[in-house]
Length: 170
Image (tube, one colour):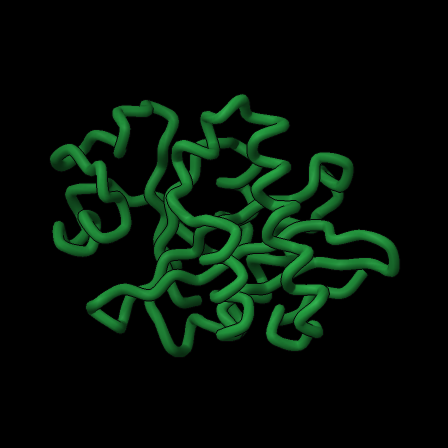
Protein backbone atom coordinates (compact mmCIF):
# COMPACT_ATOMS: atom_id res chain seq x y z
CA UNK A 1 0.00 0.00 0.00
CA UNK A 2 1.14 3.54 -0.79
CA UNK A 3 -0.01 6.78 0.81
CA UNK A 4 0.79 9.71 -1.45
CA UNK A 5 -0.28 13.11 -2.67
CA UNK A 6 -2.78 12.68 -5.49
CA UNK A 7 -0.88 15.18 -7.63
CA UNK A 8 1.70 12.40 -8.13
CA UNK A 9 -0.90 10.24 -9.90
CA UNK A 10 -1.40 10.51 -13.62
CA UNK A 11 -4.48 12.36 -14.89
CA UNK A 12 -6.26 9.16 -15.85
CA UNK A 13 -5.93 7.78 -12.31
CA UNK A 14 -7.20 11.04 -10.81
CA UNK A 15 -10.30 11.11 -13.00
CA UNK A 16 -11.16 7.55 -11.88
CA UNK A 17 -10.94 8.28 -8.16
CA UNK A 18 -13.53 11.03 -7.57
CA UNK A 19 -16.47 9.18 -9.15
CA UNK A 20 -15.57 6.13 -7.03
CA UNK A 21 -15.73 8.31 -3.94
CA UNK A 22 -19.20 9.57 -4.92
CA UNK A 23 -20.29 5.98 -5.59
CA UNK A 24 -19.17 4.78 -2.14
CA UNK A 25 -21.10 7.59 -0.49
CA UNK A 26 -24.35 6.83 -2.26
CA UNK A 27 -24.04 3.05 -1.87
CA UNK A 28 -23.29 2.90 1.81
CA UNK A 29 -25.01 5.85 3.39
CA UNK A 30 -28.35 6.13 1.62
CA UNK A 31 -27.60 9.78 0.98
CA UNK A 32 -26.83 10.83 4.57
CA UNK A 33 -23.13 11.33 3.95
CA UNK A 34 -23.79 12.63 0.45
CA UNK A 35 -25.97 15.37 1.93
CA UNK A 36 -23.24 16.28 4.39
CA UNK A 37 -20.61 16.72 1.66
CA UNK A 38 -21.14 19.52 -0.79
CA UNK A 39 -18.18 18.67 -3.01
CA UNK A 40 -18.86 17.10 -6.36
CA UNK A 41 -16.56 14.57 -8.05
CA UNK A 42 -15.42 17.42 -10.31
CA UNK A 43 -14.45 19.58 -7.31
CA UNK A 44 -12.58 16.66 -5.73
CA UNK A 45 -10.72 16.06 -8.99
CA UNK A 46 -9.63 19.72 -9.00
CA UNK A 47 -8.35 19.45 -5.41
CA UNK A 48 -6.38 16.33 -6.38
CA UNK A 49 -4.77 18.12 -9.31
CA UNK A 50 -3.84 21.06 -7.04
CA UNK A 51 -2.02 18.69 -4.67
CA UNK A 52 -4.52 19.11 -1.84
CA UNK A 53 -5.53 15.44 -1.57
CA UNK A 54 -3.77 12.44 -0.07
CA UNK A 55 -4.75 9.01 -1.39
CA UNK A 56 -4.17 5.42 -0.29
CA UNK A 57 -3.68 2.95 -3.15
CA UNK A 58 -2.35 -0.54 -3.70
CA UNK A 59 -1.53 -2.36 -6.92
CA UNK A 60 -5.15 -3.06 -7.77
CA UNK A 61 -7.39 -0.70 -5.79
CA UNK A 62 -7.99 2.84 -4.68
CA UNK A 63 -8.39 2.50 -0.90
CA UNK A 64 -9.36 5.95 0.32
CA UNK A 65 -8.43 9.59 0.65
CA UNK A 66 -8.73 12.89 2.50
CA UNK A 67 -8.74 16.36 0.98
CA UNK A 68 -7.69 19.74 2.35
CA UNK A 69 -10.16 22.58 1.67
CA UNK A 70 -8.72 26.05 2.22
CA UNK A 71 -10.61 29.05 3.54
CA UNK A 72 -10.66 32.75 2.82
CA UNK A 73 -8.69 33.27 6.03
CA UNK A 74 -5.81 31.37 4.31
CA UNK A 75 -4.27 30.20 7.60
CA UNK A 76 -6.97 27.59 8.32
CA UNK A 77 -7.88 24.56 6.23
CA UNK A 78 -10.49 21.85 6.69
CA UNK A 79 -9.61 18.19 6.31
CA UNK A 80 -12.67 16.79 4.61
CA UNK A 81 -13.90 14.31 2.07
CA UNK A 82 -12.25 11.66 4.25
CA UNK A 83 -13.23 8.14 3.35
CA UNK A 84 -11.79 4.63 3.26
CA UNK A 85 -13.29 2.02 0.97
CA UNK A 86 -15.62 -0.26 2.98
CA UNK A 87 -13.58 -3.38 2.12
CA UNK A 88 -10.42 -1.84 3.58
CA UNK A 89 -11.67 -0.35 6.83
CA UNK A 90 -10.30 -1.28 10.27
CA UNK A 91 -6.83 -1.80 8.83
CA UNK A 92 -5.25 1.52 9.87
CA UNK A 93 -5.51 3.06 6.40
CA UNK A 94 -7.51 6.09 7.56
CA UNK A 95 -5.00 6.81 10.32
CA UNK A 96 -2.14 6.69 7.78
CA UNK A 97 -3.98 8.98 5.36
CA UNK A 98 -4.59 11.55 8.11
CA UNK A 99 -0.96 11.21 9.25
CA UNK A 100 0.19 12.12 5.75
CA UNK A 101 -2.25 15.06 5.65
CA UNK A 102 -0.73 16.34 8.90
CA UNK A 103 2.84 15.91 7.56
CA UNK A 104 2.07 17.71 4.31
CA UNK A 105 -0.21 20.50 5.44
CA UNK A 106 0.14 21.31 9.17
CA UNK A 107 3.09 23.62 8.57
CA UNK A 108 1.06 25.72 6.10
CA UNK A 109 -2.37 25.64 7.74
CA UNK A 110 -4.11 25.24 11.06
CA UNK A 111 -6.13 22.08 10.44
CA UNK A 112 -9.76 21.63 11.42
CA UNK A 113 -12.35 18.93 10.68
CA UNK A 114 -15.79 17.74 11.62
CA UNK A 115 -16.49 14.04 12.08
CA UNK A 116 -19.57 11.98 12.82
CA UNK A 117 -18.30 8.44 13.32
CA UNK A 118 -16.20 6.90 16.07
CA UNK A 119 -13.79 5.45 13.47
CA UNK A 120 -13.23 8.81 11.76
CA UNK A 121 -12.73 10.53 15.11
CA UNK A 122 -10.17 7.90 16.11
CA UNK A 123 -8.15 8.42 12.91
CA UNK A 124 -7.90 12.14 13.70
CA UNK A 125 -7.37 11.86 17.48
CA UNK A 126 -4.60 9.31 16.85
CA UNK A 127 -2.92 12.07 14.82
CA UNK A 128 -3.11 14.73 17.56
CA UNK A 129 -6.43 16.36 16.73
CA UNK A 130 -8.38 17.46 19.79
CA UNK A 131 -12.10 17.89 20.20
CA UNK A 132 -13.23 21.50 20.63
CA UNK A 133 -16.58 23.13 21.13
CA UNK A 134 -18.01 24.99 18.15
CA UNK A 135 -18.11 28.09 20.35
CA UNK A 136 -14.32 27.97 20.92
CA UNK A 137 -13.48 28.66 17.28
CA UNK A 138 -13.80 31.92 15.34
CA UNK A 139 -17.41 32.07 14.19
CA UNK A 140 -16.55 33.17 10.64
CA UNK A 141 -14.35 30.13 10.28
CA UNK A 142 -17.13 27.85 11.52
CA UNK A 143 -19.54 29.44 9.04
CA UNK A 144 -17.07 28.73 6.21
CA UNK A 145 -16.44 25.18 7.44
CA UNK A 146 -20.10 24.46 8.11
CA UNK A 147 -22.43 26.45 5.83
CA UNK A 148 -25.47 25.21 7.74
CA UNK A 149 -24.01 26.18 11.13
CA UNK A 150 -26.40 26.90 14.03
CA UNK A 151 -24.83 28.85 16.95
CA UNK A 152 -22.57 27.93 18.78
CA UNK A 153 -22.59 24.59 20.55
CA UNK A 154 -24.83 22.72 18.15
CA UNK A 155 -23.47 20.70 15.31
CA UNK A 156 -24.23 21.79 11.78
CA UNK A 157 -27.40 20.07 10.63
CA UNK A 158 -28.22 19.56 14.33
CA UNK A 159 -26.54 16.16 14.39
CA UNK A 160 -25.63 15.33 17.98
CA UNK A 161 -22.89 12.96 16.75
CA UNK A 162 -20.96 15.66 14.89
CA UNK A 163 -17.67 16.64 16.55
CA UNK A 164 -15.29 19.49 15.81
CA UNK A 165 -11.61 18.52 15.91
CA UNK A 166 -8.58 20.82 15.65
CA UNK A 167 -4.97 19.74 15.09
CA UNK A 168 -2.98 20.70 18.19
CA UNK A 169 0.39 20.99 16.45
CA UNK A 170 2.37 18.41 18.40
